[in-house]
Image (cartoon, rainbow, N blue to C red; front, side):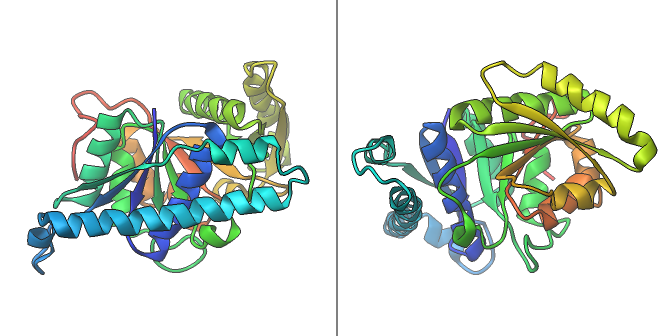
Amino acid sequence: MPIVTGYVDTPGGHDALVLGAQLARLTGLTSRVVTVHPADARGLAAAARDPRWREKTARVAAGRFARAREALFRAELDAEPDPGSAALAAGAGAAEPEFVVVGPGPVHELLAEQADADGAAVLVVGSTGHGLLGRLAAGGTVARLIPIAPCPVAVAPRGYRHTATRAMTVVTVAYDGTDEADRAAAVAVHLAGRTGAALRFVTVAEDADGVPAATALAQKGLVSTPVEIDAFVDVLVGPVAATLADLPERTDVLVLGSRGYRGMRRLLLGGVAGALVRTARYPVVIVPGPPEQGTPAQAGG
């Protein structure tokens, strides 16, 4: 189960490389970097079929990824007093990622197909546009990708290549007791277990009157956590999207669930998930629900 990173030579693509490198290094999973060439009317489709051009693209992606991984590794060594420590051993033993060039074709569809074919643990992409995380237009690649992704999708915030940390200490899951939240919690448990991070269950109450019920929901998630994982709950009061996008205390990644293909599309067009991928300060991992009846996981649109 590799970490699959969608790469394009843009600032958002570089952010995705850093997040993909970080996840692969911390989880010990293999890594695959995928470049998709879109079909358009400017001749790129023809160029993308040229083996020389594809080889050059793969070399560029490999160089970017190597620099991202080196920067993260250097930061860890700088903080580690013993040069013969586990940090050095982990860095030295890291497997070189595999680079894949696909297309031309619709970027979101080909990324989803590649992640499905690879059995990806996580599909990593970068943000687009302006602002901290960028404004994701309804027709943008990220907005089109998430509803059809066969696995969790991690969105790197804008500028993450400059702010990524050497370690993952707190994995936060947005929890409300629903089936979607339980699926997100399972992914968060797995991520915390592989990285050694603490697991934080966050439930948001709209007002003070809702705190007791929110606390009971958060405790439901907590009791289902394996005892070997350091887990705790945090009940906050405020607007759900705004609160989750700017959590107090440290959060290295936020995990939340979606409600399948159509529900997720509605969320992206203006709900909580859409607001989070536009405004959160940290990477957001969206865990898809099962496809709706009659809706294939790889459906386009």
